[in-house]
Length: 204
Picture 1 (spheres, rainbow, N blue to C red):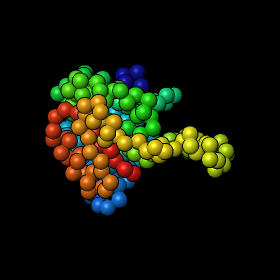
Picture 2: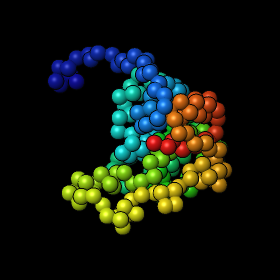
Picture 3: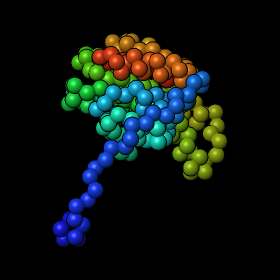
Picture 4: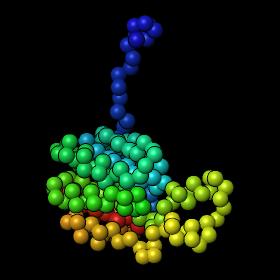
């Protein structure tokens, strides 16, 4: 700073606290981000592997309570659930909230058992669109056109459909499903007030 005569910079300033209006009705990624802005506690740690569903997270949460944000840096999928375990073990006095795409979550689903076994204070939000949406987007980006039946079967998670409430329960994590914005906000508020692992399957 001295070498370039930068001098004293302005003091760091947090964004003004601001919560967007909570929508009702259909559950969307935007509604999830707004609910997070309204209900995440101060000093929460957000672990983000929502992939294609969470790209607009910052617009709704810049005025939320102060929080840390950890995310996938690219090159692999499956980091979300174990990243949340590590954050919760490192900072046991802080609420950890993980935004997890359903497809990539299946790569490391066993981390839910760790959440339960270690009684970690983690709220898991599964973005359940029952497809590898990011890969469908990549097919389009390379000009592959509309995927045929076999390609679609490899990219869809609906035959049979994943049931994250049952998957979580089988590993000892309490869970519930949300199909509306209102229902999701109520579940998230309750989970953020509680302690210990809880999973919300958000049907988007």
